[in-house]
Length: 164
Length: 164
DNA sequence: TAAGATTGAAGTGTCAATCTTT
DNA sequence: AAAGATTGACACTTCAATCTTA
Image (cartoon, rainbow over the protein chains, first blue to last red):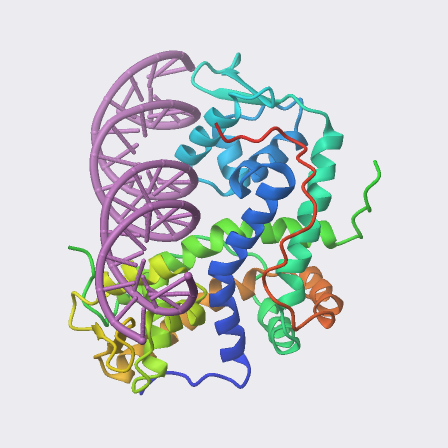
């Protein structure tokens, strides 16, 4: 085959990451649900909200900061705003926007944050092998700064498209 | 507050991981869809299938190896088996099982694997900062071997449960 | 007309119930 | 009765279309 071979421990890293892609979100989500009754999405949004309690971030702001889509933000906020946790109202400066404010004490969030950090340690960091960490070193040296959207020039299509 | 403070770069690691939790699966999935017309789930299953071409793994085997739920395996295989890519039939040894076989040449998978590895490098490894990698070092030394299912003893419930 | 936000429809994943074989 | 697998109902996410304000 005309492809580059895998360098010694690269395959290990790769497989571990593939497993992590499915395992980690589920595990973290379960822990969060148990410890503070929030999904990963809700937690992420609330965390970013609590960091600018006076800033009144708009839905778009939140979407950008949390790396979530506009529609997801819309639905998550709508859901959370039914509780006395978040208030949502039309922006006073620009009538097109919707702004949100967190209505709970920072201490509650910090407590949840500690639980979550613990969960992250147990679920992610502690499961990485020494080989993986070694491989990460040289890899990260490059780019460090790069737009996340590189549309990937090619489209080989080895399998028929599964869409019907 | 009565919680442990965050050690210098821990917060950076944590935030990056939270972002990655949402960003990475989407990015990898998009790349895979473009390069070989498969979703992350389908790719993962096909990869594991192709590694034991003679073993005739059962649905349960696949579920364990891919860290996916039984029902998800069932649906993914059902979907893929409509193409000339995978064949599915009742197990001959144990009539309760369903076994699957991959019907395409290994070269096709290897080519896709190379694309995917490239995608993983660009999407994940290259985005990790030096601080993150440094933090990973001491963290992974512990446990290395641990059941993934630690039910987390506590349940503080800082927010009211959002379920209705 | 464009930007911000929301909503309907469709895809994907999960839990619990069900069916079959052992 | 228990194990393996599948299915139906439901929850979450996304895409595209829509609505409102600038």
